[in-house]
Image 1 (cartoon, rainbow, N blue to C red):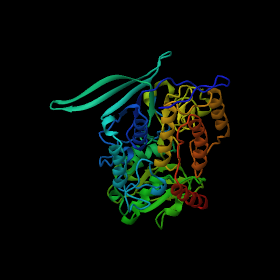
Image 2 (cartoon, helix red, strand yellow):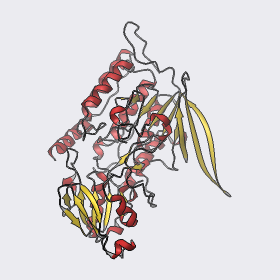
Image 3 (cartoon, rainbow, N blue to C red):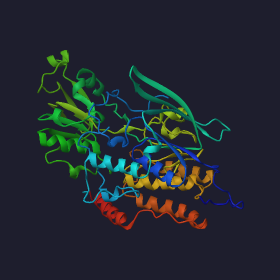
Image 4 (cartoon, rainbow, N blue to C red):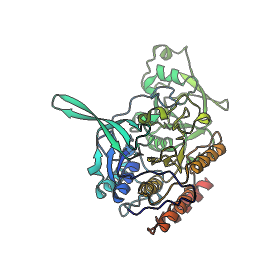
Length: 470
């Protein structure tokens, strides 16, 4: 692997040292493409996957998740549903490592996407590097230590029960590709916790949704305007469900035109109220077909009654519990210091350069943090960039420059924005990163990264225009 020499006449970027052994946390699309590109670059790679399969959120498991707390608004202190489809068209949601099967439509079901990720892993020999059923308990680097210490627990079934094997590993670099669909975000709406406590089977988070059958011919209040809300509405409406979608209007509310006909879009919920005089409210026992005894007051003052079920489709909390005190769940995002990764908002991953490299120690990298993007395509690109930097073929800017860029980005951030969103603008991000990386590669006499091909660019331009026009 060729690498750059350091120009001592100017402030140089951080020295990463010689990187050979790399840990990748997660075997969803981010982890698989990260591992594949690192393997192609000649690194020794170990992938840790907490489940027994490749595919992350695209692996369908019929058993619903356990209930999250109601509310659930911040990171904790130190899977997909049957009808899930991609919401980004396949021509702009693809890895450079493999094209979609011939004849694939713009939107394909979960099984096709899951198989696609598994095919990438198989073709690029990622399976051989995965340690399945393994939870990463801790990732740390002691002061003065050149390597990261990774502690894991591996579950295995035996004839007499099961075993849990703990192990400590050492790595030169770590790639966090664990995704952000594990911990449901449940807003602290007045009265919601009471509804959940009184009528637990009628109130759930979208992470627990599996099939539309339980919602047939019922009035369903869906809170949220993201992909899960759209998917659930499209699945339940054909079975006779009356859908009421409660959401807050914003520039990110772009999926309304794809909702089924007849969906009633209303303002955000302000309060859930129980009708305490109703017999069912006192007993907590609802008969089939009996609506929840109560009403929902919206932020515009309107009232909704006769609701059978509530689905909270308000997204997820970003958390990396294995990173220990780099998470500060009691600290406001505005007060994050130059080492903190996660704060009480549960969304921003702080102190990353280009949404990839941890500025205090760039041998810790993140793939998949960016939001409202082409997912597979962008994460694949970010993985290629990480491989070039770890190989010493592209040099990060000086630490002071990365810190200042991050400070300026936070200064521009406004409440209501999404810090990691590249909404209809990831082509500009890709171009900036390519200019940086390819400048170094060309100076080192190496082939530049190609970036996105012309087919992707043409399809992305059409996608941008549709988003901006919605």
